[in-house]
Length: 139
Length: 176
Image (cartoon, rainbow over all chains, first blue to last red; front, side, top):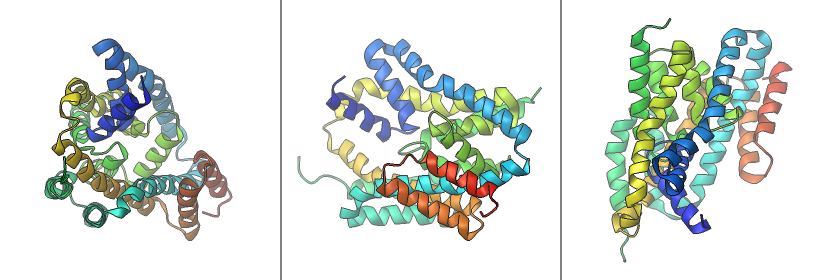
């Protein structure tokens, strides 16, 4: 796969709903071996981690209440939120050039984080206008 | 043996989330929390934050948080059902679109949608971070760790898991 093809696949994976890397695995798999390729790529990505997650779930259920674990989690969850915010910070940079984009980003943040509105309604209310506002003016 | 009702609920919730996850898995975290904590009451917000932190720390995509939620709700079947429900709808859509993508790649509406959804995605991811911090950070030290991790991610190439380790150590030390 060329760099350009991969960039296309990555952008399609982000464009479509769902976890990006999951979409990308299906797309890449389908390019090489059709539906079977997609399944294999998906399992390659997810199967091992899924089993690990199940194992972690078991451990958490059994030992999660121990004070040692509780204490550790107070710090780990703090780092986890920082990681998400850092990801957001990286994503926001190209958008800062577009004031309209900043407005829609802020509106989304307020609606979801502060007002705790259902996502579906927020998307239906904001997405169409954001898309129209982003319509390219030249061909 | 788990009753069928939780499995049906898990399927419904995560199939829905699969299709509204605009921009990726992290985008839908606030809505996932709203469903899992507020609507279904399967766990508290702090516990949901912990499961997400586990999913981030563990190898593989962060979306595996759904596996952990499914496990908590209904054991292995719950974990399996939640994971499949979260992935099957979007994967099917991706597979279908993969072939016709070429046709509309150069269309104005495609570019408009991509540019239009980008700020919404960023708003969602920021909301996500805010909500996890809100559920998890209960001391100034916690906020310091959050801020430090944010800076490390933005300005350094240090692997974020080191911050998780630092957080765990500080947590054990009882200062968080």
